[in-house]
Image (cartoon, rainbow, N blue to C red; front, top):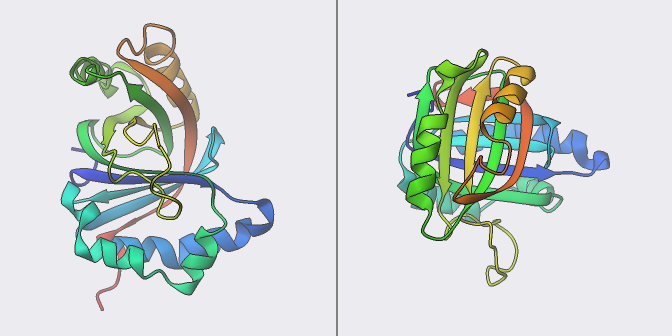
Length: 225
């Protein structure tokens, strides 16, 4: 199974150009390591948009889904560093999805990533999952390494800051992830399998994007304290 663990936290956001250097410094020098060090977190990957919005994307894999609602993770959320508080306040167009990895096919991870956000129709989840299980086959496309489905948990998928009473119709959206060797392979796979009125018969396609890998961090990369 190419994705480590059973669950994933997906975050994506924009940042003003004037704050971008500090934002990247925070991610690279504090935040990724802080999150991966939490019990149950296994790895994290940072991306920047080749074509898509928001501009920045991060994927965190966890051993189980429960890790993403665990006391260890909740404690970190409730006690951010000063640098985190300052930086997170500058996020724009924030997406935060907490989900289960329900399909993961292929081997390895690619230098480019396709992300398709879909909203299942009420009662259409089983049909959509069955359809995607057939389409998420990396063997059928050159340059595609692995393909995955993340099914968000609506109760946990919401920005950390903000009014929790505000409706969030996209909290239960699903995310198709396509790992490939280059952006052209991702573009071809999206066009062939996930474009057109018949691509998602029991769901609405909300958005899609293609991202370049910036860097990744595994638990084994962190020095033992």
